[in-house]
Image (cartoon, rainbow, N blue to C red; front, top):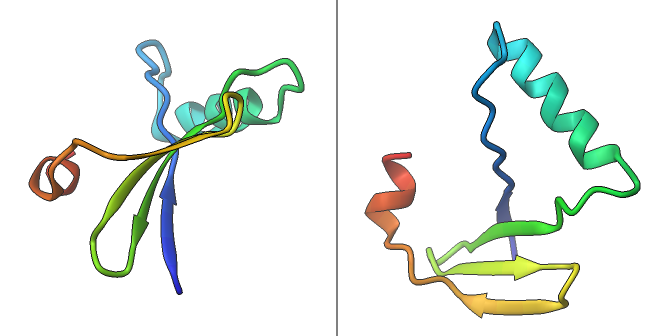
Length: 70
């Protein structure tokens, strides 16, 4: 089975898309980071909220249309 996994971070002060991506990567690689929550989508479109810190997997309440329009 194939999955699409996404992770988001709000960044309001970067000067470019590249700088925003670099900050996100730095956050993810920080050993003390709490960047452990992911949106996972199955091939059939089912969405899950996965938090590796709390070891939870929950069916997402976010609709397909809302995710596609982000």
